Amino acid sequence: MPNLNTFQSDGGLAVFMFRALQDNYCYLVHDPDTGTTGVVDTPEVAPIVAALEETGWSLDFILNTHHHWDHAGGNLELKRLTGCRVVGPRADRERIPGIDISLGDGDRFEIGSHRAKIFDTPGHTSGHICYLFEDDRVAFTGDTLFSMGCGRLFEGSPQQMWSSLQKFLTWPDDTRVFCAHEYTQSNARFALTAEPGNRALIERAADVDRLRARGLPTIPSTIGLEKATNPFLRPMSTHLQETLGMRNADLVEVFAETRRRKDKF
Ligand SMILES: [Zn+2]
Figure 1: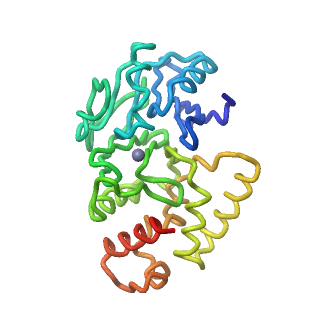
Figure 2 (figure 1 turned 180 degrees about the horizontal axis):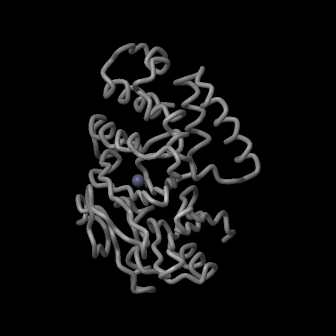
């Protein structure tokens, strides 16, 4: 498994990023001072084991975002192999295999000395959490926030998803966003139909095309970039509203129409 990227935050939290399945990203998060290590979701066991071997880190925690098989499918085997503990959304604890520690809005969870703030972000599934390592400016957003996209509404309403997405608007712009899938290029194509005149979007889409042409990941993004380019965070944009023919419409309705169009795109 090639080492795509290792990031280290200014605060010292290390993130080792690698691929799993078709287009999932998986992340080891590691505190070098204490050696504490977590893996964000478990799409597939073999690449996680390979990543642990490559880094020499030993697994303490699985940090699940939600119950889908391509996020929690490897929980039980990894738990058996490593003796790690499973952390996941309280709102969906019955559907998280092997869960030991359940978390919800406002809770904190620590990887060594690095503290994550937990956000409930239902909409894609009825229980979904995101992990914001606030001091490190590092966040794991699962299938709620993608680069220039958001998760499909499998189990939630547009109102619920828009409430979840609004939480990201409160995060610092320089927060690095590590989402769970490489959907960025197709998301950009859709976003350009929603806001064809958005200059930040046009530039970001060109950057993404260059990265993908070289087979490189487009992740992480940042909250600042997402605020400027992600149509699902921008229902307040008059440009987007005009494209949809919904000038001054309710923001939930604008979000819902954007999501409907993306579903058919
Ligand atoms: Zn999912």
